[in-house]
Image 1 (tube, rainbow, N blue to C red):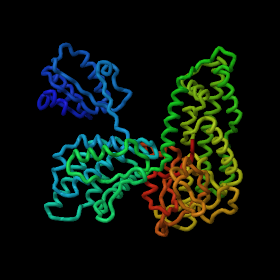
Image 2: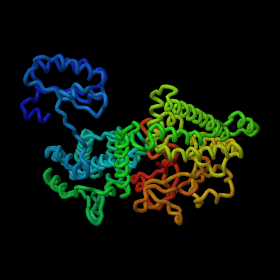
Image 3: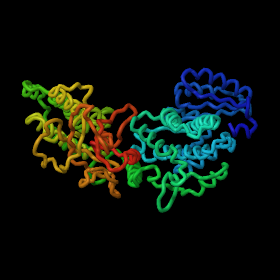
Image 4: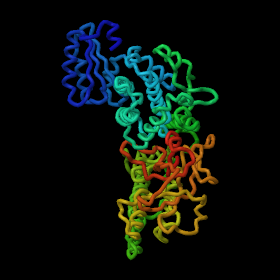
Amino acid sequence: MKMADRCGFGGRKFCHLSLGQGQGPIALKMLEISIAKGQWLMLQNCHLLHDFLRILEKKLEQVANPHPDFRLWLTTDPTPTFPAGILQRSLKVVIETPSGLKLNLKRTYMKLRNQTLESCGHPAFRSLVYVLAFFHAVVQERRKYDKIGWNLFYDFSESDFSICVQILETYLAKSLEAKDTEIPWRSLKYLICEVIYGGRVIDEFDRRIVRTYMDEYMGDFLFHTFQPFHFYCDDFVDYIIPEEDDLSGYINAIEELPLVNSPGVLGLHPNVQIGYYTQAAKEMIGHLMELQPQTGGTGGGMSRDKFIDNVAKDIMRRIPPSYDVAQVCKTYEMSLTPTTIVLLQELERFNLLLENMRKTLDLLRKALAGEISTDAVLDNVAYSLFNGKLPNIWEKLAPDTCKGLGAWMDHFEKRINQYTLWAASGEPMVMWLSGLHVPRSFLMALLQVACRKNGWPLDRSTLSTTVTTYMDIDDVEKRPNQGCFVHGLYLEGAHWDKQKQSLARSHPKVLIEELPVLLITPIESHRLKQRNIFHAPVYTTLQRRNVMGEGLVFEADLATQEHESYWILSGVCLILNTD
């Protein structure tokens, strides 16, 4: 709009429409008027109406003699369905969020006006606008670190910041008129954290991060006379609230900040940079693998088909016979418990995987020998075996994983061992939770067993966890009276101090470490008394949780000597399956 004003196309010469459901016909009418009268037309959020874009493409092809002043502006998020015809006829401008706190702060203040900073006479207004800008930069910068930053990707925009500034101005102006010296922190934090920014955040643990930032950045401590507030301070840099009077002063203060900031400014451990670069390298290697030739060479080495056939033959040799679920059910029919039902359900799911693996590998070997024709499923299996990946059809029938084919086969054989032992000898003394297809169902079964035994109401009971001193499952000699021991959990974002039996800061260059054996105990909710505890989410894989809420298993109680806010901002969690 500023550009339109500078070019003489402001006011009635500039039209804009934010696309959404039912806005297609309105946009087409505005397009016809703009073409005829030589107006500038901006259609926003084009990625929301894929069908309309195809209609728009045809309309633009039919335009013969548009007004020479006519311009069409389209804004969209990246989407694979955007018509190529429109892209080929357009000038493309890509806008990316600046990298680093300094550039984010600078971008925010470059869009502010002096009138905005002077719109409220409250002495705390300018400082709180800077706090909001810093918070806005921090929540955007966390996206750089993928899942340890946020479980999901959130598109925090400049409009979020602008609305929060308006809210801040309104509340502080009312306080000034009422001559109230207290700032309404509770109302401000609720509106900013839960409504504006929190309205975009749909994951409960991500929302916990936003609330923690608000508690760290909003309060009377900002203006303490004898203890100045620091967003972050170390030997090299000090992030404080500048004491400036106008916009240019704040911009000059921002210019003095370092161009590159450490993850510690965001509350993250420096190790996350290693994870960030490792992930970038993995993606690059993955793209290079996809670019390599997928046909057999003419040299003296092994051909592609021969290599795939050998891999398929090796996997088929490692696939056991399907489990006799009926026989297992008959064995336990006199002592059928909720955990036994979980075993039967797990075996049924595992049998589906075994049968599918045998079938697809057998068909693949026949296709490689030329006995049958191939299809899309077999093509994917062959491609995956050649590149060391898990075939899509197997992945759908297996627990969520980020492992490559080799590591997945080791995991597969460990699952076979646990199921075989469980079916033959009863529930293992230490359960390998990572080997279950639906680990949450086993935990609920433990709770049901305890409730039946003790006469507790199920809806008023919960699970409590304690990290034991056992590092090896062979050290466990006796079952607990209630609940069970589990192993195979990995701690990300922190270190477990075995001497103090509490969370500690991660060692340098150690991203993930195995947790000692965990004791899970059912307990009535009103009897659960906890102090100095951090509630760590337990996820199935390093991908944590998706948009559908899948991936979370349960919450583990980990002892801590630090305030829980430190671990929340560090993105600490437990993982069942590593890469």
